[in-house]
Length: 243
Image (cartoon, rainbow, N blue to C red; front, top):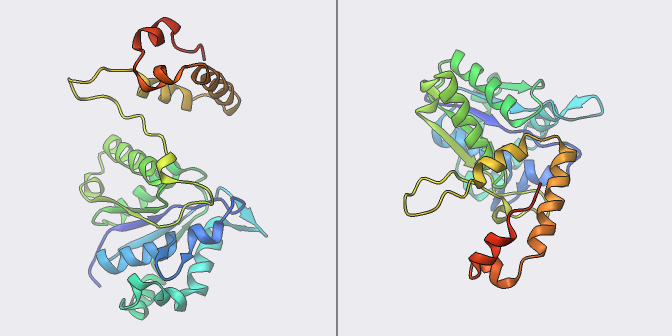
């Protein structure tokens, strides 16, 4: 098996709804994070694989430990996923068994990325592949790109990829993920929304909730025409909510 990237399987809180579905999936087509990581390893090769994290625990074991136990205990069932039906699972297991690292220290996405990047760089991995769910993928990629740029780890950033699983937490839709991208097109106005979202996300949870309530109240007070952008003057007169 050729040398490949370092693969980071992002953890998922053990007490969040749908843990087994998010991490394992629903054969034959809906791959969770763990089978998706194995598919990435079979396609790209793998130098090492880090499994997170330490954000939660049950019965004395971290979510990382639970995840890797799930992987090894269900290894024989990986072939139930159509995408892995023809993979050399025996060879993959032999290659991975001494190359899996549990990260039980990181407690959030950025920490997982920073710690994995240090590990991958130290092992001269050819790139970095993140494995996570659709709702989490945009933020994970942003955080990884930002971290690798800040630390100058070009050996990883030159081949930074996201392998997206098929499963989200229950009732979580990928289209509901809010992305406030800084404007770059000269033919569109700069609303300042991205900068304000960044400030809001830095607030403590209680203040975030208060800000969300005030924003919701302001939005609820807008007419249908104002919401559609057909009454720009009135919206401007109403002003933005004080949050």
